[in-house]
Length: 309
Image: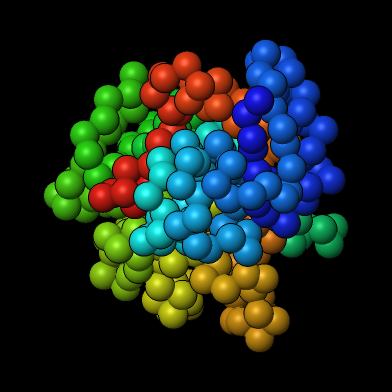
């Protein structure tokens, strides 16, 4: 019997208990799943950063901590966590992100907001360019960034992707390194942020890098709030350097009511909905990683502690 501890209150136990049990059965795993198991008996921990569990020292026999979220920045630096840590990458999360990014890209590309603001009986034609004439840059070419890049390429957009290390994706111009970042920013009429949050990426989009974008560029941030310096973005929006920003993630969540993003006419605030972990598909990933652990195989999406993701 495999002992699996569900050590989080968000996502809720009621939402995940049945999908997890179903996924374990489908994988042929005999699992004791509970919210209360003696630490020394726990084989695997299902976890999210909102868990009350912060000291992993007693979990001496635990083979892996399996995160339910894609982001691990809140746990990766925990010095008591010596067990393998796996982040969540699943089909539902990926498809949700692709749909959000593609939807808001098309919204800005077609200037739908322009027409929504002019429902007053006036006839004011505004013809957008074709997708082939609207260069897009995606910062971050992990699983989610790669999927979004491919989807936008299929829609006809010329897509440039940037990552810290060298990548190759068919149809995508892939850049890396400091010089690559400058080049990636310089062509981005629409910029999509899908980088993990690390020491290197925090405040990446500051005033100097916002100035490297083409004047009037649009920013979509479904990645992490601290990738952008808020004050620099507001100044760039006020000056017209950035035309619009659609933001799904923020330094403080929920976004405080007094934050200037709420009232800014060129900012769309989304309540962190770009890609939610779905219980059905996430449970399948958890079950597969436990199957792998029991079979002595490599875990999926194991976090590199040195890189932070």
